[in-house]
Length: 307
Image 1: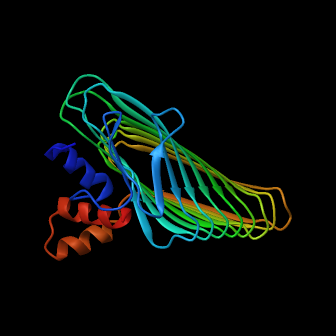
Image 2: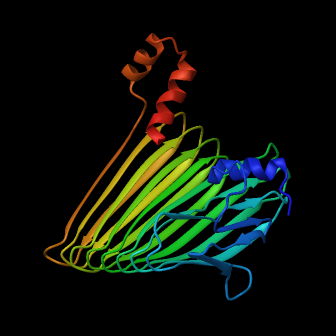
């Protein structure tokens, strides 16, 4: 199927794709898989219901990538999909997901992505998911991703979750189970503007000895937008975990941060920190002294903060 310029612009925004890549791939457009192919080491196929997706990285695979972006351009489309990602034992792979919505109508466009992610013993996963919305009409752009992640013994995963702009409502729910000597790092970068609302709800169970987890959130709220960040670490063994939330608040926006740690083992070491504030005046002054106007200085600070 030939993708048009709008489709490609959205793919570039959420998956950094300027052309259709070689290798394992699944592109979902307006509720249908329009491009799908496997590679010798990564199998990409339909889910049990025929609508979703199953991606299997073969054991021992090294340094391979699979792209699985979603694009919505049909006005008022309500899209829901169940995906399963399995990274085989001792494999190393990158999954590049993300969803871009273009809505130029008065109807609501919505995508609910429900994911199960399994990282087998000794495997390593890099997972990148970007969200982006555009359109000049009043129709809302809604994204509600949810994931259940299992990190098996000695495995590791780093998950990068980014909301670029243009998403009116989002509720992101992530539940993770980290087993002995497994590790998980979740990095969130979130921008809200206007009347947008965003909620992130993360719960990580550190289930085995030597398990570790880190959650890092960077958020900017502008206009009259609202953000709610909740992260819970549950230490059930001799483990280590840390939650860190930093946010910049602007205009009339509101941010609520609720980090929580719950120790169920005397050897669990869990910590958290949170900070919400405005842009420091000295940062603006320094950049403006270098020739930037105030708007350019603010944009530079925010870009660096969310990087």
